Amino acid sequence: MSKGTSPLLLRRSLLSAALTLALAGCAGLGLRDPVSVNVVGIEPIPGEGMEGRFLLKLRVQNPNETAIEFDGVYVELEVRGSRLATGVSDERGSVPRFGERIIALPISVSASAMLRQALGLASGERRKTDYVLRGKLAGPAFAAVRFESQGELQLP
Image (cartoon, rainbow, N blue to C red; front, side, top):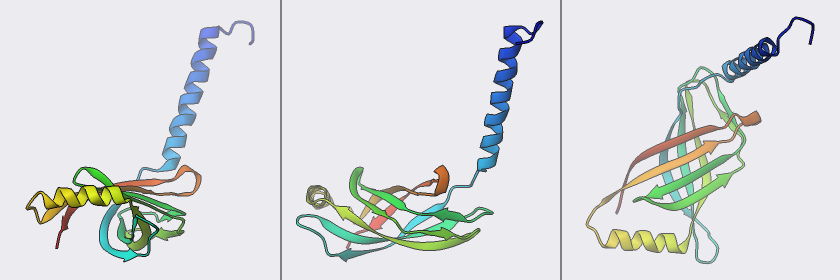
C-alpha cells in the first residue's frame, strides 16, 4: 500500500472491482427464456424385480436465440402430489434455436409408488389426474437448463 492510500479506499476499490467482475460474469452467462417440456409418450420397457420401467418421451421446445447443448437428462415425475418416477440418460445433443426436439429416456417406478398410486386412483372416481414434471438438461460448464411443467394425464 502506498503512502497516502487509506485502507478504506483500498477496500472500496477491491469491492468495486469484484462487483464489476461478478456482473460481467453474469452478463456472459446470458439470460434465457424457460424451455417448454411436454410429455408426448410413455411406453413400457422390461424392468427388474418389482419395479416398473417405461420409456418417457419428451418434446423440448427452445424459445431462445441460441441452441441449447446438453450431455445428460434428469427427470422426476410427480403424480397426485407424490413422486412416482425418476429417470436419467446420458444422451447428448442440442435443441436448436427457436426449435424443438424429442428426447426419450427410461424412467423407473418402484413397486410401492405403483401401489400407492393404484390405491389412490381406486378410491376416487376421477378419470384425469394431475402431474408435475421437473428436470434438467445438463450442459457443459455449469450450463444446465432446468425445467418444470404440469398438466393432466387422461386415465383409461
